[in-house]
Amino acid sequence: MRVLTTIGLMQEFCKRAKTFGMFVSIDEDQTFGEIVKAAPCLNLDTALQALADGSAVLIFDTRKEMETAFELTVGDDGPTKRNPYSGPAKVYAATCNDLGEIETENT
Image (cartoon, rainbow, N blue to C red; front, side):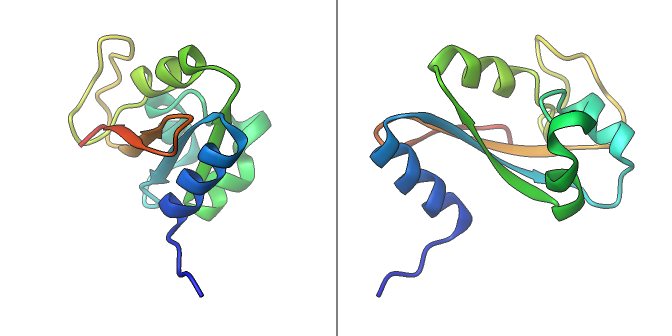
């Protein structure tokens, strides 16, 4: 038996599927509108369930797609070079490469 966290599941999936991923954890005390400003990849059309659940794993076809989504996600570190949002919402993000290794976090 193995017990895996959500991040562990993302790592296992990315390694086996040879793809890239990003785990996001959402500040559930904020409105969906503020969260989307902090993390544009979580738009209401494609990520409504993730917004409601408070966390998700995003899967990307390329490293570039993953890096772009990460660079646009504002966490505890504050605004990024690509996203000047400085409102109340913060979205934790951790990226995973196609070897199943965590690469970056935004806190």
